[in-house]
Length: 455
Ligand code: AMP
Image 1 (tube, rainbow, N blue to C red):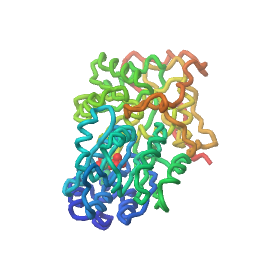
Image 2: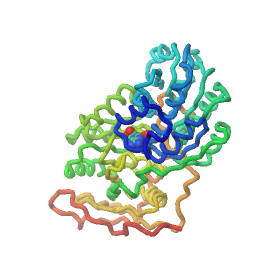
Image 3: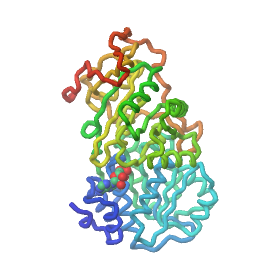
Image 4: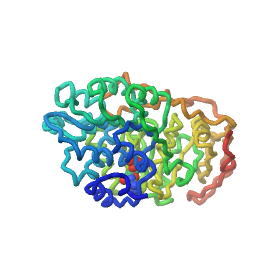
């Protein structure tokens, strides 16, 4: 299939060709005609599937026909959970719409509101926004939705996780009832469906699996290691393997800062990105990482969510996530667009429960490699896939790190870090495994690599 069979006009096709896309991705092939025909859409598609173009291209197509926005009015509103995602979606709108006479703007919290108000004054055809700042702008009469044609909720599941439900409902109450609504989410969770019920009308349901759904293109392995030795191990892995561009995930913002400092001390350029950093610092950190000036970017889940960094070769889970789905999101940062990638998790004994949940979710026991000189004293129990598969539909809430910069206590729902003081199972000293080389030689796993699909 090619893009020119989907009903897109020449100026849009030209922009797509300039991006070097040969063929539409599965989500694009399904979503583009549905959106162009004016239908509501509910799509389960993760970042990395091409979903942004999947809704942006047909939206631009629909907009190019109608009357331009004027006087603080907005024709298309795209809501995203984080600033980074808003900025990325905004730049996709600008890229794909560059040959069209349409105005677009991006608004999010953590930066001055006045320039955003100025931008909205003449009206914009496409507005990309995070919920909190949008409500502020609305409250100050800087934006109006009388002529709104299309509402998009991007990463709606994450917006729900972050506690934006009331903001979303409030925003929707200001929109015309007669509109087209498009909702995107990583999965069709119960909560997502509940939200959708009041928002979409007879929607086309689209579900595609990510091209990078863990098993196929990402080489995954775990390094059993004691908690205290994780940063030294990471520095050694980076050094010995010559890793040049690594996205590292930590559980907490403080953990991200601390690790970035420790890596810097070890002579490895590193920066941290999370919700406590100013927008300027986050933008600079991401830009430095993208152009290769910063070798290691340490991030929390929400800050990293949706980051589009082309062909990222390595992802490291410094801490395992508490929500197993986040593991899939994290490693989805690598091996994009068919490239191969590597995802390494440094796992200490107290994280065994998280590891077990992840392995159940992806239905695979992940390869283990113990690095010489970093053999854990606190042994990681063997993985055995339970015959009961992980429950996919009941999603836990993930830790929130307020990456929108406007949310406070009420949205800070999350899990208590677990297991810190848990008794270690199978503790034993394994110093007999050390070698004198000091190199990162790896020992292959003791447990099986894969098991048959759980029933
Ligand atoms: P998304 O899932 O929207 O975050 O997109 C992931 C990446 O895929 C982005 O870098 C896009 O530029 C890229 N992309 C989107 N559509 C296509 C396509 N049809 N062919 C190749 N790459 C694409």
